[in-house]
Structures are given as structure tokens and as C-alpha cells.
Length: 542
Image 1 (tube, rainbow, N blue to C red):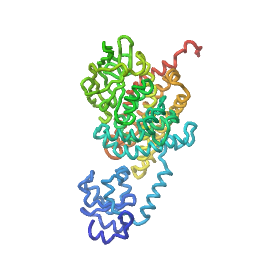
Image 2: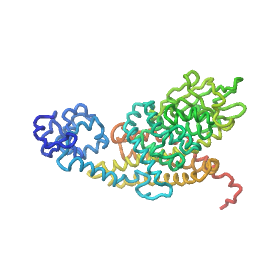
Image 3: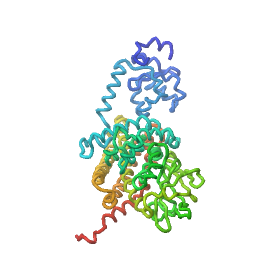
Image 4: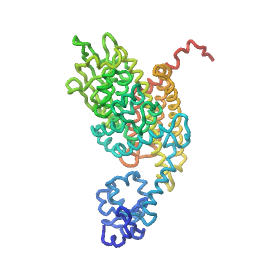
């Protein structure tokens, strides 16, 4: 800070910051001495020119140096930039009146009172719902607080670097009950959690946890990674589909030895179904288990596109046996001599831990068979229904996040002298996105309500088709959302940094959900085949 600027300072405010008049700021408008005003804050950029990602010239622009550059700034940067420590330290004070405290209170009220249209499922028009009570809202608040504090601030850096989940973050999630939330609705979870001192977010009890808590929880899990699908899959994807079968079908031995450490964040698990030979066609898998004379199974085969496999300690694995057909087994990685993984490069981040798994003569004791021999195909199909339902929840929440970004950008961006949202063609795109996302969400809540009243057997019998149809619809909607979002953001939608990074990541990753868990074509055909069962027994003529 220059000596003449020191003389211009007025009384200090809390935190050691000063207040300045616009005239005082205007004196600092040359190279080596640059002050700017952004959203009422005064920033000293005198030594920042060479570090500025856009170079020095934009800082010396006549509309920036020594001026209030708020409008220009928010046309080029995300608001969260101002909160980053490396940039927040450049703030030396505030423009005269209102006080920092008054400004913060004003901003707080604005945020609370004016949510972005269609940015939340409960908000724009859905003020009341028969599906949720206070416990669901408390869970959302608790989960959001955790993710906003522990995950979201780091998510983009992890995603960009391809960082796999660390032991520290696993334990943090375990202690916060994040992994517990993935299995809280399973039978016996309440007693299991009580026995091991496992807590759920928001002080929830597993005995009160219903499938709408699952819906809320999975929405917040996807929202909480700030648009970074790779990080979401790396942290939670493998666990979310590999862990539930242990509690649904596993013995007490399997639950205590393998599930509990995963729930606590001490170990990791993933689901190993797909193979190079078999994706949606599960019946074609070739990984084989042979029963040895010592009573142990010897498993050999390969699995491909296994989410979270790179960091998994355990693999919930579908195998084929000669006598009993398909079986599900818990296979340990061990020392890596019989089970090994290598990364698969995909269009989203390596942070997802997507892997090719090689299993060669892995020894599996009989107590590691999950459920009964010969039930593997049924268990896989039953798991698929909940996996697909979860993919709809998280996928549609991701689409909603993209819509929220588009709404913000359209209201903020000015072209040809007026806000982008004033262009009819932009409003038409926003309307199509909002209508499609809300339609999926409404059908999702309807199906979720049906699930809340049915047994697992009834769900598998009556809702497998509707869930598949909804998954198909959700991924079709995501295609529309991606297309419109790219057009609204323009060049920023294909730029991995800055204002449009959430859109750029989305358009590189949304097709995953159209393939994983069953491709769109398979889902649509399966839904119609399920619907047409028994039609020959019912008069259906024009």
C-alpha cells in the first residue's frame, strides 16, 4: 500500500479493514498502483497484475482501475472467487457506507429471500408436499452444511487433478454419517448403528429413516460436489452400490467384518458386475468361481468400468458357478497378488477411480458368499432397481444445478446492452429445461411414494419397469439440459475454468448415466416389456 493511500484512510473497521470514498479509490489507477471496487469491497491489485489469470491489461482498463468494476467482474468471474483466501487477502477495505456488517446482513437477506427459480425442488412452486416432514428438512440442512464445509470447497481441485479419495476424507465422511446414510434404510441398520456408535447426519435415527430421506440425502450428495461428477463417483458411487447388498443379503459375519468398516470410512467397497463381454446383458458374465477340495472358492475373471475400483478394499462381485449358477461374493483385494486394478481413462475425471479389475485364482472362503448360492442374478436385479432409482435422483439434481447456473448467468450476463434473460430465445430454453426437470422430479416422487408402501418383492415385481422408464426419461432430459446450457453459456461452456466450468463438466459426463446401470435403449425396451406382461390375458382392442 502506498504512503499517500495511508493518509487517505479513515477510521479502522472490525478486522483491521478501512473505509474509503470513491474519490480516494480513483487516485489509484495506474500500473503498480491499482485499486478497484467490487461489490462494495476495495481491493488493492497493485502487485497482482502479473498473477492475474487474464494478465495485466484488463486491470488497467479505464472502466476498472480506480473504478467500481462490479458489473464487469461478475461478467467474467464466479462470485465464489471473492471468498477464496488467495483473493480475499487483496481486500483492504470497503467503500464508504454502508458498513461491512450492514452489507453482510443485506446480502444474507437477499440470498434467503430470493432463491434462483427452479434451483431447488422445494421452492419455486412446490411449497407444500405430502412426502416430507420436519425430519427430512433437518436432514437436508445437516447434509448440506457438511458438504458445503468439507467437500464442495475442494471438489473442483480434486476433480481437475484426478485425486482419488484420501483416507482422511473417508474418515471425515464416516464420522459424519455420510456412508451410514447409504444403508440407513436397510433392515437391522438401527441396531447395527447403535451397537457400533455410528451416527447419522442431523441426529437422525435409522429407525425413522425412510426412502424420502434417501431421496433428500442423495440429492445433497450430488449437489455437494459442486458439479464434479467424477468426485461424486469416486467418493460415494462405488460405496453407494457396493455396500447395500451386504446389508440386504449378507450374513452377520459379512456385515460385521466388511460392512461396518466401510460405514465408518475405514475401508472402501465397490460393486463389480460389468465385464468386457457383458454390460447391460448381465447373463453373459464369465467371471467363474470353482469350489475347491478345501471348501474355498477360487475365482478368476475380469471386470470393467468398475466405479471406485481403484481405491476399493473389497469387491461385491457377481460370479458364475458350474452347479449353482450365478452367485454374489465378497472378494478382498488383499496384497494385490490375486486381485489387481488399473485405471480406465474416461471422459470425466480420474477422481472417479474407474477401473479394470483382474481376478486370478482369488481365494474366497464359503462364509464370503453373499446370501444363498444361486441367488446372484436375483440379487443383482434387485440391487439394480435401487441403483437406477438413485441414479435418477442424483442425475436430475445435477441437471437442476445446471439449470440454476443457466438462470444465474442469464440474469447476470449482458449482451447488446441488456441482460441475456431478456432474449426470448433464452427464456424458451430455460423454460424447456425447467419443465423437463420438474416433470422428472414429480414422477420420481410418485414412484418413491409407491416404493415406500411396498415390500422389496413388490418393488421388484411392479416397479422395475417404471423405474427403468424414469431412468430413460431422466437421461433424455439431461441431453436437452446439456444442449441448451452449452448454447446459453457459449464459449464458457467448453472452458474448463471460470464461469462455465460446471456446464463444461456436465456436458462431458452426463452420458455416463445414459449407459451405467443399463443403457437408455435397454431401459426403454425393458420398461415396455414389463408393461406388456400379461396383456394377452386382458382384452385390449381398438
